[in-house]
Length: 60
Image (cartoon, rainbow, N blue to C red; front, side, top):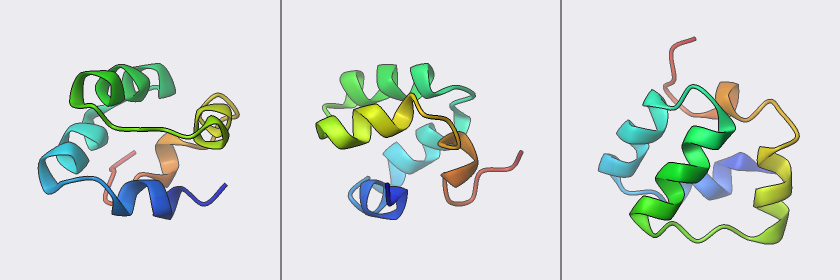
């Protein structure tokens, strides 16, 4: 899954909040609170791992 497409649709504020997420579950919670629409493929990929390290600008 290309996470770049997902992140390109986030506002600057949403991206800053995404960088604070430590787990995919935290991002899912953020998505729900911010009204971020996720496709079935994106939802599936979130649970597959590697997501948090894919967030642009996220410091590990």
